[in-house]
Length: 72
Picture 1 (tube, rainbow, N blue to C red):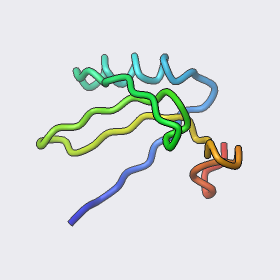
Picture 2 (picture 1 turned 30 degrees about the horizontal axis):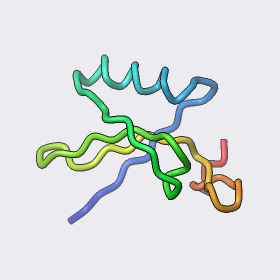
Picture 3 (picture 1 turned 135 degrees about the vertical axis):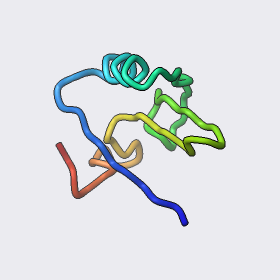
């Protein structure tokens, strides 16, 4: 069964969030770029930890928050 966790970070850049996550968890996130994900985002994908995606909360198609319940 799949499960999802959602976390947010206010007032820090995506790069700073990536650095803090990598240092805290001892992992390396891969930089990617996708219009669907809103431009530059970071990803960790392996069979042990599942998928981790770090991205801005912005829907690239309408400019609204991608996660409507957490617009900030």
